Image 1 (cartoon, rainbow, N blue to C red):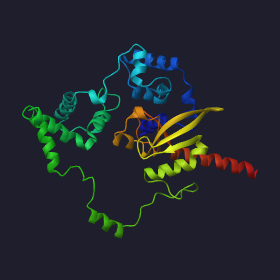
Image 2: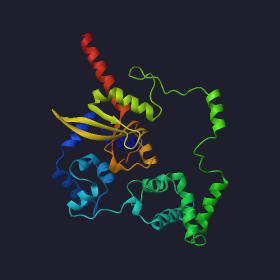
Image 3: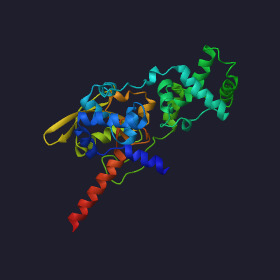
Length: 305
C-alpha cells in the first residue's frame, strides 16, 4: 500500500510542476532518453521514463511531434506499439502463465515493470474481464483448443461460476423504476469549496476544474464533447502562455478504460488518481483543493494575528 501511494504521488503533478514541465530543453529530452536506454539496455517506453521521474509526455510534445520521432532522433529504434504486438504473443504469455499457476491470470501477474503489462491487455481487449473470452476465441480460431485444453477448461469454468461481463445497459423499463424508487446519490460533504459535495463523476470534475482553473493557473480556451475534453493555456513564465490539452476523468484509470490515446493528450484532470504507471501527467483536484484550503487557512490565521 505504501509503495502504491508513493508511486501515485510521484506521478501526480502540482500546478507549479505543470509550469516547470514546459521549461525542459530539446537536448535535455534527448539526454534523458539516451541515459534511460543505457540503463535498461533497450529503448525505454515513455511510460517507463515517467515512472523513473525523468521525463513526461508534455516534455516530448513541446519539442517533437511524437515520442517515436524523439527516439529516432536519439539514434534508437522505437519499441513495438501495443496495437502491433502479435495476438499470438499475448495469448502465449497469458495462457502459459495460466497453465503454470493453475488458475486464470489476474492483473497483478502482469506488473507495469514487466515486458507485457496488464495495461497492454486492457488496451487491446477493452477491459481485463474481456481477456479470457478473447483468449478462448483465439485458441478456437487458431485450432489451439486441444493443445491448451486445460486453459480453455479454466475459462469455461469461469463462465459456469457466473463470472461474466455485466450488460452495458439496463433495460429502459428498469431504468424508469430505478429513477422512481431510488434517491440521488451524493458524495461526502466538503467543508468549503465551489461544490457542496465531492464529485462522483466526470461532470463533477469538469465543473470543479472550471471553478478552480484561475487559481490553478489555467485559462480555458474551449470545452468539447470529443477527446480531449479541454484546451487551455497555462502560464509557463511571465507573459508566456503554452497550450495544454486536458482530459477530464473521475479516476485517472478511467482514461485507460476509455481507451484514449496518451499521445493525443497532455494532462489528465481527475478527482482521484489511481493509475500509478500512467504515462500522462495527472492533476489530482482533491489534492489541489486540500492545498488551497491549507493556504486559505494560513492566510486567515495571519489576518487574525
